[in-house]
Image (spheres, rainbow over the protein chains, first blue to last red):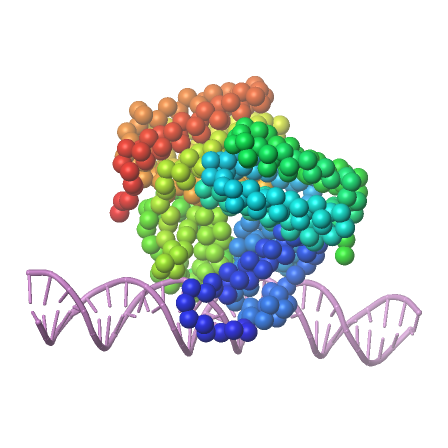
Length: 228
Length: 228
DNA sequence: CTGTCAAAACTGTGATCACAAACTGTGACC
DNA sequence: GGTCACAGTTTGTGATCACAGTTTTGACAG
């Protein structure tokens, strides 16, 4: 471990490892099907195997990683069509609900934040920066969801993004910018400004639906996605 | 560990510990708010602390246990009204969907199994056997859900039951039998026999709704549930 | 160059130890 | 009698080791 004994309120090493792995997964820095190992991760992060084991166990529980039943070896799950459909339906249920509940707690600060997120997203899209796009899109959505004061739903959404992350990257990495209509984000912001909760719910549903539909088409067209 | 080196295909100690804790939680053998400790659990189960840590980490990820932020001490979460409402909505979304999908894979064997589960449930109810009721109700529902071939949804349902378990017990433990209308189970079985998927979805929704509504009323009436 | 098989490296799993923070209970003092 | 301090215990956390599978490597024979 690099820094050892600071004094108070530092998050545990296990949490740091978890956050770091979760971020990598959500941003799609791990390819579907890629195998990982505890000791390798531990060495890369500069910690012992112990906290990595716990973080990995947590990610397995969220189905963001999996233990192959034959090998007992660790890897990033690859998506089947069935699995992606479930992800799509679950996201389409929980995320509009979170957005709906967020309306009551919206503030001008948050609006400004969302506009900034969307600007970053558009910029990244314009220059083909997939990393930047993934990061900005995640920020936009979860800056909204965090307002809902529904920690259980928030956790469900987080788990669903962890599962879709590797695959989103794999799909969006090969799309050119024009195929991604971003109107929904602007419509969402406008609906938030009007305080129109029903419109927020509807636009969020459409936004999630379109994104997942794109992934579904990509999955169908190639039978299996395994890159890198 | 009691039995050490059997030969092949035995589930890992970690899995055994997890299953054992999960079962206890679903059946409500842990009271909401109860604090538990790794070493105590490990000693009770006759294993070392290591596999317990991983099982507990997994349960924390499923929000079936929680780490108090102040103490960093382990306990069974107690339900707020907000939290219960989220549980209710999530269960009302995912469980009818699972039941709906199960219809396509129903067999006479399963029908017989469901009738047996329901009979056990009614018997337990008649003699005020809360343990038996909890167990039979869980069996009934998950014998259905397992058919859906939707492992992601199944996992979500499992997590939601883990979270509601301790509280269900706390509520049902003080109800007398007549307050629990069980018609829904019979209607469900009938709908399965007819292959009427829409009816299955509707009856499952009503069954979940009524159960959770009961819990909601109980929660509102006592402000806070902490027993044992 | 190719196929085979044993040695070496790597994997997840479980146990054990060390440590600091938090809790427990007991006794002294005002 | 109530409050505070201090010692002893219990807690979660991280590191390290041992072990049994599995995979990879590498040398040697054909």
